[in-house]
Image 1 (cartoon, rainbow, N blue to C red):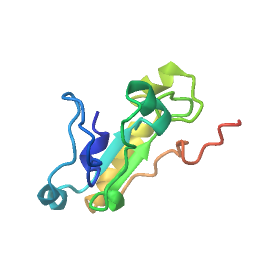
Image 2: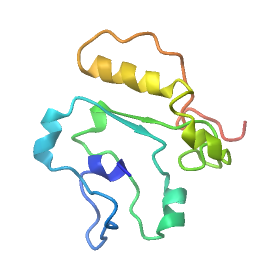
Image 3: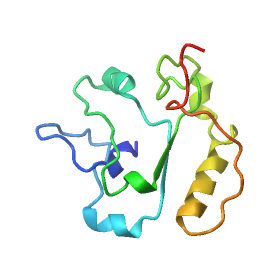
Length: 127
């Protein structure tokens, strides 16, 4: 899970499991042009794995250079999502291209016109 790598800190008293890395050192941020996160676990999903897990948040050093993409129905990141295949769809649903365009833009190049892809932030779970 890469979600905590762009966090500013992990709350005091919480120890991340051995298989999950924590925030990158602040000195690394100036060497990172862009970050693309696919299917970032929401608080509900994190609670299934560990009720005491801190929310995944993008720290100040990465906020302006991070894109988070969530496929509609992805149970990991989409509120109320029940489509397990959605979490595996990023390679074919256009979001990989959207992420690539974002990275190219952050590197100073012209981005291709990406197809608009719905993200959880834009989605209406009632639909």
